[in-house]
Image (cartoon, rainbow, N blue to C red; front, side, top):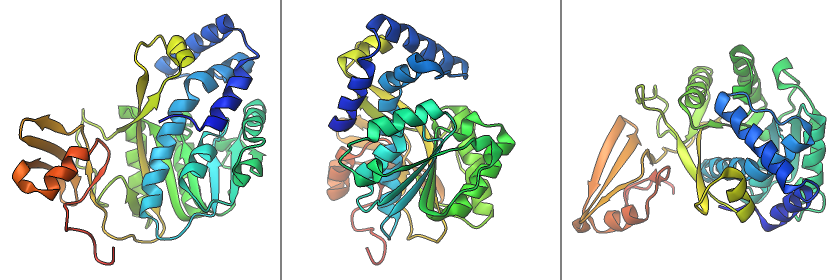
Length: 326
């Protein structure tokens, strides 16, 4: 997945004001901060390094999570509230996946990051992006949240103290008319937070849209954890700053989409890269009754052909097993 051309052009224009050497130094500091669990995007150099190295990845992960959410909603999403907006990754991902989006509200503590988000959205083809309302707010203080169809907290709650994250997630669920989407890094810690917030939301009456095909306790046991990957196409600059040789990277993320109202039965979820062997494809699945394994062979016909196209993180439903009313 790549950034939209209009966003990529705006990012490039912003980066043009910083020398390559300065950008490399700032990117190295940012990477070191992420490895230590204390990323620092303060200062102009840090924010521009974020645009160059992290924005493509967060955009890809958020877009995938929002695509899965939209696929399970039976009503159009017309408004979205972004908690911890940064430079606006969620807004750009939302306008790519939510065709009816009309109103976008972005909460961000850092004035300079918000200003950067406004600059990136200025002149965008999406009216929702151009007209987005940016509100200066510290998520740790439990800001008032106006109701929106969908509320998103992307890579934001993990930066809060656990109690503050739990309170904000509960508040965000109350502000979501249709759904709340939580996305965190695809690490054991990131998944641990997602799982605990999922369980608390279900206990308060929320319903799971994705990725889980059930509302039972997560069947995965430590040291395993539920996470997915969004493939990010790297530009030449991105490769240089990340010190990578490949033309892509996989952004690992954990997420949950929660709805206020029950949804039709969900499909199973592919938890690993399908294992492809001569004449056989094996899928590791999260199913309504827990973990499952499905082995498919050529004689399985339509299911075999579907499995050949299946990927890690996809929903899986046997051909002919569509839910009633679909």
